[in-house]
Every structure is written in C-alpha cells, then in structure tokens.
Amino acid sequence: MNDTFSLPVLTTEYVTDGVRVDELDFTNCGLSVAPFKASIISIAPGCSSPVDQHEVRECWVTIGGSGQLQRDDDFGQLQPGSVVYFASQQKHQVHNFGDVPLTIFSTWWKP
Amino acid sequence: MNDTFSLPVLTTEYVTDGVRVDELDFTNCGLSVAPFKASIISIAPGCSSPVDQHEVRECWVTIGGSGQLQRDDDFGQLQPGSVVYFASQQKHQVHNFGDVPLTIFSTWWKP
Image 1 (cartoon, rainbow over the protein chains, first blue to last red):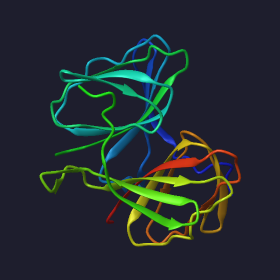
Image 2: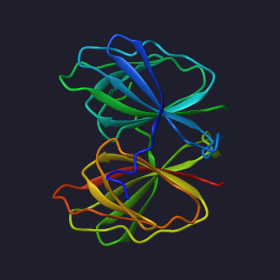
Image 3: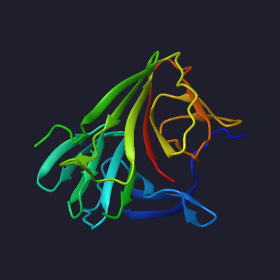
C-alpha cells in the first residue's frame, strides 16, 4: 500500500540554469513497458528551456504553472492541461515568465 | 500563430455521471503520429470513474485536483504531477472527494 503510485525517477539532469529533467522509469526487469520515454521537466520562474530540435517526436502536457512557447515560427501560451505535439525537427523552446515553477510531462518516441 | 497549441479533441464521451473523456487527436491526414492514444479525463467533485480493466496498458498523469485511486488491492492519492502506470488487466478506479474537478491526461497502448 502506497501513499502515491507515482513512477520512480530513473535519472535527473540539470540541462541549464533552472531547468531540471527527471526521466521516469517505465522499465520492469530492464524492459520498457511503454513505446515511449517520458520525463518531468521543471522550469524555475524567470528561466527558459534551451532551444531543442531532434528526430524523435515529442508531446508535452502542462501540469502546473504557465509558459510562453515557441514552436518553429509560432508562439503560444502553455497552461495546465495544454497538450502540445512536436513533429520531428520542429524547434521548440519555452519561457517561464510566471512566478511559480512550470511543470511539464514530456513523452517522446521514434517516428 | 495560436493562443495555444493544444491538440484538438477527436471525440467526447460522458462515461458516467460527472465523468467526461475527451480523446485527443494525434492524427495527421488520418495517420497517427504517436504509438499510443490519449485523452483528457475530467471527474467532477464527488464523482468516481467506473472500475476499468482492459488488455491495453495505460498511464495517467494528474494535471489538476486530487483523487483517491484504487489499483487492484492498493490505494493511493493522486495529486498534480502524479504519474501512474496500469499493467494489462490491472483494475483501476479513482474517486474525487475534493471540491474541484480532477483532471487526468491518460495514454494507452497495446502490450
């Protein structure tokens, strides 16, 4: 019996100032139970994620806080419940101009 | 240029009193860009999801509100940021005893 069932963290990476990425452990006996990888991205107030661009497809679900997102040449607002998809090679960067942490569930997979 | 990049809703289903499931549209030209399906589950205060049990694997990410989760014989608390995995055939049901909606991002896929 657990207080919470939340998945354990596999690795923690501080990718730049104020940006922490906790990869979640979807493995069981070393095998992945999911066709994707996933992490929790935390961006401190006043901080921004690095510009990211990669072959894998990605999806962000905003859990808490808010952010200004740039995806290629488009700009938009992230708020709790926003679900955003990034196609392969789409550039993306988010800025947390708020006063609380911006928390994102990120999942990514090969095309 | 969008106010938000949030994915559109494909279908909306009211599965029982106070429980709404909005399946998100991960298709492009009819083809899925993701190896999973996904929905936003909204559970009104005082309401519960039906007991669910199925072959597909599932993952819940809690976005807002809180809930009491039962997974087989275990009980736990959902809060924003909780990420929970359900193996094939694991029974799961959540009760929203709070006074705000419980909002969950759900994703599921074949084993």
